[in-house]
Image 1 (cartoon, rainbow, N blue to C red):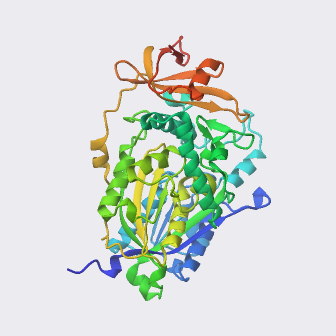
Image 2 (image 1 turned 135 degrees about the horizontal axis):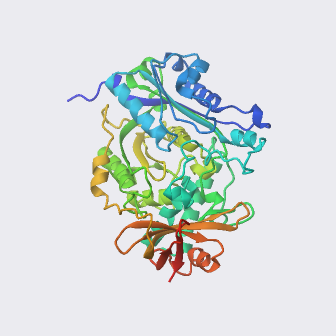
Image 3 (image 1 turned 60 degrees about the horizontal axis):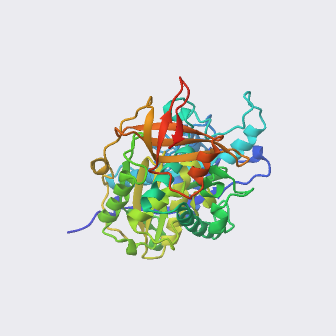
Length: 501
């Protein structure tokens, strides 16, 4: 029985990326400029001439310059091309590049496209520097992430400080540490080990933003240059969005690549992949110590490709915050002493919001070319919400396209009961997870407790920075706060407050 026709076998043939470091912010490229340059470099990498015949252009939504709509003809216009298919992701989620890669492979598999270009770019560093020159009426420091239109809203979670990913992911970190049976020191040591290896990879990665290796102790220890952000994360443990980076790649059919004389040792084959998601409401999750959709995405990708962890030469485990690769490596069985990245991670490689995984694709393609190796790309986006995993290989995977990568039903089936939310609760409760928020001077500003009531409902309570005993209990490491009992107290319309028993 013959396999798929070369006309319908997708391969990656060109990759490109750019770091823009202008002396003056006003001289820097905007996100569209970064996308255009990244694709031009990808075209050169493929041998040239593919972009001019591109019939599908997909763009990762960008956040830095909201006045731009890159897919509305701007990227294509600057490139001088007229693809019949153009689209942009709805949001700048971290899974976007892998989603677009998978959709491009499917379009080629269906014969709907011959040459697909995927790109994304963020210029948050330039945007932040320019914004800093303008005074805000409220006197607050400009913050593109918190000021994004999809986050400027108030609600129950937001009133307790749960607004951006930096606020929410620590809930997974602290719940996960308790579930793993780790002390605070052991949990931080694991984070430091993963991140130190990432810094070493970034140091050797041509496209990484920070190319200086950092030790595990330096990563997890607060200092003047590594201030605490949200417990237990320091600056060196969170995604570095203050970058100007663009990346892109070109996918075509095996037949077209051969017609254009592209050597097969320059091609990288696409395998099977799987995607699944959690609820968009992070308070409507069944748990914070694991993710059913994350596990479903990774496990199905491994099963569909018929590979074991020992078959993987490289992995990219999304690394916006340590809790994500910690969950992923436990599902995959990835050793702590092997790098969880090929690019450098979102702290050191750079965290251009939704487009990091385009850089990971670039790095993985360069690792796999002219080898028989396999590499796994695991992407995560939102608030530990979106998960998409795919396999790449230096040789044919035998995968047929198009393929259905939606495994949501499987994720839903393995998800536990989601507790109801009780926004007005007062009385005894147990800590499910928590975090503390810090100011730019490193001092504790406030905290939030996610608690479970005796009836099993979920509720929130605030922690005042003035409650030094409680702050010390939550952050000191002498005792595990998760699972301890306390009380939710409320006075009038004020936020509920946590009191330790």
